[in-house]
Image (cartoon, rainbow, N blue to C red; front, top):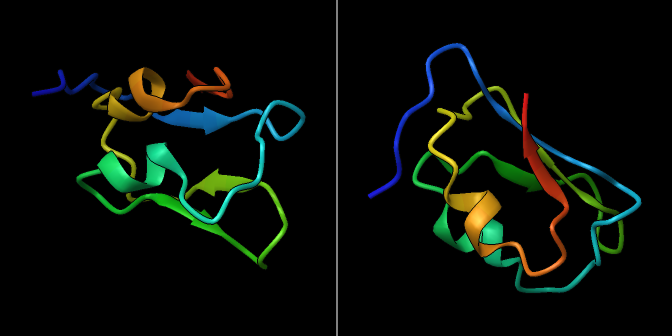
Length: 67
């Protein structure tokens, strides 16, 4: 289980986000915080992010950071 980081949240770096139908970070997010505006656009993290860090571990492109 991921560790919740108080007052921290994940951010996706758009230039590193490789757009696929199945985003590994989205699949593992317990808060359902990884979204996409339109198909073909980079994913982003919404306000529901709990800072658990699971998305960082599972993104194969290293496009997610905690801020």
